[in-house]
Length: 358
Image (cartoon, rainbow, N blue to C red):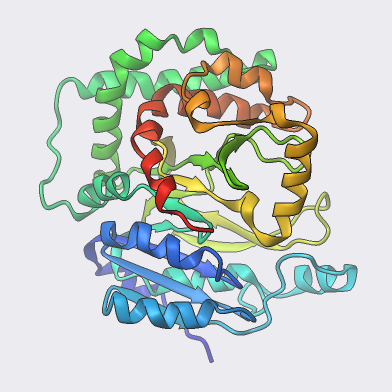
């Protein structure tokens, strides 16, 4: 019997919990844990139905991080990806609390959080520890952020981002003319501190993003339209949020993907965009992705850019390399903000790539 109790969420400690849901993640999960755990107050891993070395690696990591890394099995033959027609129809018919659903696994992980704030940690991502720690310090509230008059500039820029996105949707393309570099430079500091203040007040959830990478002897950033690997990832599905009885997951499916039943996160917060990328995303290096991505790189080498070259690209150049038929308007509009605000942070973390052994 699995107990999922959210009532204890009303009396949590200040701090930040990381939540990993894992199945057959032996290739990445050790690297992922090492990259983020020092910046978190705790890291919770709920794994299911593993047939590789994931469990062995988690046991090793528990010895390395006693008390801080917390491991929970959830072996209920989860129905989530690569489902047959019969499995898909069965999964969508299941009640919301079924142990066969990935959303229930997510709720189980969330119920284990001991701290007031939480963030999803994906096992195929290598995190920028200092960036997480910045947000962890906000969540700890050891030094409560006091309102400052210049936060008004941050509020103005938050509204401006919303206007930029609405204008972009209306005209059918990212209106990057609205994001000149001088404007970003002028508002970024006040925006950064303002959204930290808002998170500490419990009024917003912070949407996080990262950089996609591919490794085949050299690191490159993909513009892979054939396997849908754009240069950035994180499209409002990675959040730092305050845990409450109003934060939970339900099952999600679409007739456009009749082999997948995943999760939808529900919360009462306004979502605002973090101004710094937070990780390197290695999904293209998964065993079931690598050969397909490598084939595209051989046939279309122009769709892969070295990190050093990428850092010199302005967003119009980035935009021109993305296929509007593959990368949605939502993505292309969002990535403009990430690119313009985050290049210096990406540059500062390139040395991490030397430590990643795949």
